[in-house]
Image (cartoon, rainbow, N blue to C red):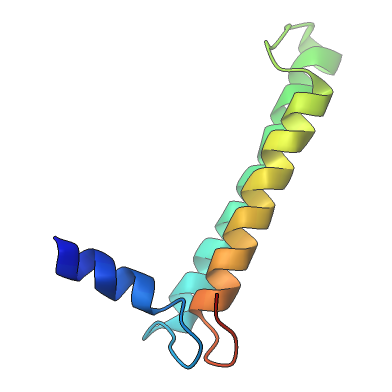
Length: 85
């Protein structure tokens, strides 16, 4: 288990990258879409259906922005040999 975790963290070092960057880039796009979907669902539920989601617009923006930022950083670093954490 420790070896797997060490191997997983190794891709974040400068000069290292995942074996299949294209698959990781696809996951990065999915994470971006998820962040946008959070905003869209909360906004649509309130505006069109009158459903009060227990999440303010500001909270949804923070959540979506956080998802996008974290995943963009992690996926960019993991798929590039020229940058690292």
